[in-house]
Image (cartoon, rainbow, N blue to C red; front, side):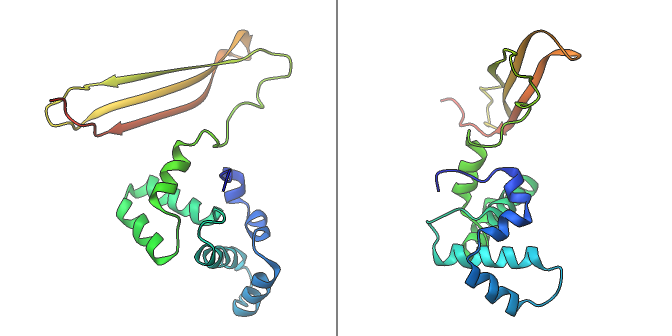
Length: 171
């Protein structure tokens, strides 16, 4: 419960099968005999584990499904319904995952050893005071800088977070 799985763990069938206890794996092998259904076995096994022990760990397949549903449809109602039926984690858990600084860092391995790098962050707000509180843009950029010429550019984009938020109107 301390750490979220990174993107490679969520996508890895081997990591997802390794989470399941041997007894549950044997049960699913007997129950689902179709060849090539290892992903289905892992997903059903993780859903069973989540239903039995909801606060003991975070199921990577269920979290991955919810993040994809959230990004594709943006529907809290759909995620809450899947959670109520036991096929996903809660919407609050998805929000914590998306806002977490524990998420996989990108481009860190691209800098050779012995080179200095520094991250710089800044935010921008556009149309903060609108009459209806809609169409507000809030963006945040984080860049990683290296001194001098590094490859073809001196700036490497580490991560970009851009959201459109509905903020309350000013009174």
